Image (cartoon, rainbow, N blue to C red; front, side, top):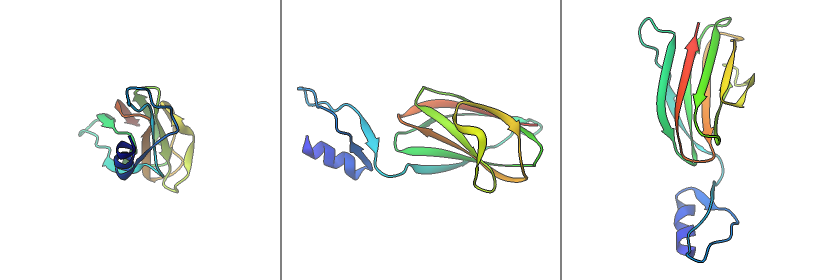
Length: 135
């Protein structure tokens, strides 16, 4: 058991204080420190205003989707995933957009021109579909 915990700790995850069943199986794990961010680019097909991304985010990682947009445009983001997965949207200034922190749906007018980041985070490995529309 100690060897298993040591291996998990070396991989970047640390076991939480959870009772171990008699069979020796562990229950839950929690990330040590911050998640590892995987950077990705939102790509819109020519002539399209919506991008649909299907991916899987692993425990102890987060996906950061980058896209450029103009102030005053409307952005709509929808995340279809399990209950432990959500997103936050960061403006070019680095501030989280109001109402877009730890959510699955957001729509609003963008405050400024520049690069936006959609940060998809999770508390469990999860497959997801992210839909981003800019008009």
